Length: 429
Image 1 (cartoon, helix red, strand yellow):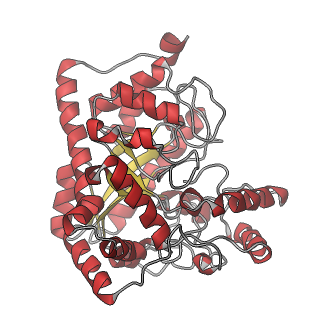
Image 2: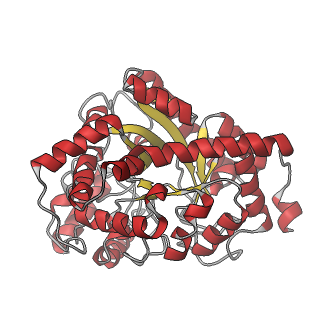
Image 3: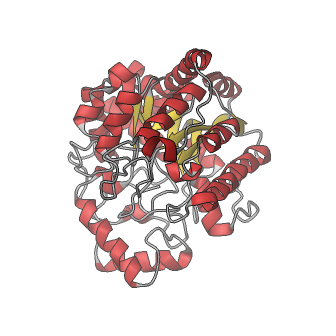
């Protein structure tokens, strides 16, 4: 999900469809002319090395729109009027593995947040059971490769925000046993043991308990996700990490100066850590001109008595009316490619990936309107000179490698130490 100051949630109400068509500023370079040859080459490459997308908020969109009534949002049918995601568009986009976010809003806390996270996990399990020809359950790198060989979409889960564990390492382990393979340490707000990128500093990065959370995640093989966290939290987590980290949906702060993005000094540390930064498509995080516009749009929602994350049909009518009065700056495929060019230059091609944040943002870049758009991004990068090997790492190989590496670390660390039963009261006082 996007940050507190960015309109967030499923964009695909009928009122929201076509949101990427508004006129406005494009990326920092003009989009390349999309050649039929480059697009065909992109689709061919994705047939062999499909996209591992780090973050899709479909489960939360299903929660908010239809309270998990999968008959009303049958993703085997066209859901473009309501969602960024359905099975046909996943296929068209060349998606071979998806981390489904089991996000719950930050205004839930304590056991309520844990219960809501369990409901999110449950709906992912329902989706996998409902569409077995298309979706394959996946918990390991080997599962991802098996799904690719079968022509199915490997379906993994990531918890978004440490509030989901209610400061309990036992709850963390329980989520892992249920299949959650990464946890974002914070969402929009601080948790008692970690600072968020979009909140006032609390503990100055990670507290002692926060470092213990990282250690325990490494021990069980759950990826530490540093999207949404403050830069100090990123650095503290890298200091504490014994396994590769990920950024499931964050772009470059040097290209777009937003606190949700990754500073260059952190990107520079990824090769030593082995981690992967997965560039997101959220316009506010990739296009500087979109930052102020989105803040004003959020304030407009609040003035109408609506939560800024609300994307129900009624809320999207308010958004649409605001956009008609205030044309929205529009990111493009080239805008996102600029971020990936920079991230590759700083971190190296072995340490980048893709995390679109579809159904977690109300607006998307032109050409990347929904999950079918990945071939356009790959074609743009090919036209910029990215090799086939580079692109195979971006789409598939890096993300699979990092999960496998976390599993390897867990086997080693688990042989040396048992579960931690430390509490936040013991470690943080």
